[in-house]
Length: 441
Image 1 (cartoon, rainbow, N blue to C red):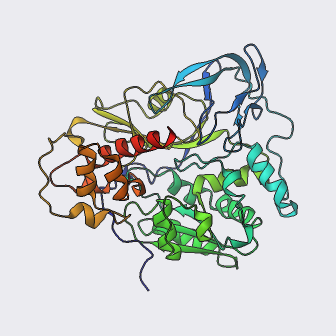
Image 2: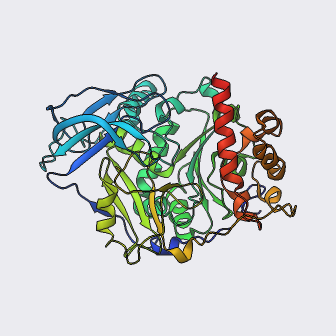
């Protein structure tokens, strides 16, 4: 039987060897350090501040509460004093209202922080409340509030809880290091989720370029009747939600559907670890594992860092730049966000800081389409990018929609495969934004 996979996809240079064999380093916060907590670190309504300037706060204290059903709490990662609430730069280039806390260096925590709890005795409602209280969202990049994802309309219809260990984005290795260093928390967190879904089995999907992780987790779940490891063919974007569901279950979903409509719940490796920390160890989401990598970085490394820490601190910890970077990306090279500054905080949806030299990012001018069809072959959503590009060039929103352009997941496969170097993905992103804006009118 072959490895689980999907139709389409590409094989970009992986770049994971820069950091994959280096254990996670804990980067503690510094006394006097300014910690910045954006109120929008998730999909949905911004969180509402619960503190004001001058307030003393503790590690593990909720400083902003969910601002609606689709929203998430914000938890302070240090003890200190609130210096203000003001707009600050986020990784997407936007100014976002943020709570600024000056770390007092004492690391004082709320009562009960870090206490072990027997999670097997908890009710489903208690588990969901703890996940919500901890401020957990999808940590793979999307940032959808996890307590909402784990509350589908038909709980009994969920028959697959899929843990996304594909980590198909080039250069990123934080999930791999978690699989190697904290597998017991991954399994423990998955067991907590399975307590919510009586009819489900747990599947940990891991690409076959991570044989040690597959071996380790397979051995650890051999006596778990409801959990299995599913080796996946290494191919980008195997870690996409739709492609992963298809690879594991052969069920297809589109943009009008949720994974729950296909009987699935999908969570990222770090999300599952965070669920374990919150439910079993009374530790809310206050930290993130970040890959600092790229050929411009002196010492590529994965760091466990408190939320709110400046990315400048991560660069310093990695030894700075050995060569001036030509391009810096929040995330990976395929789906990350290009940066004009690193003066922004680590947030819940942060995953990596990838820095490239000029030699790695040589720009090539686009030329006319040669109708080779490579973009069609690699599209995981079975779209026809040349026709979509024609509609985008004409700014024809109706035509773009009729070509199922809103099914595009912006994975970048088409632009990567294009020998003419046409900016396909960029054009489709703009068209999708324009269509979404027109629908709101």
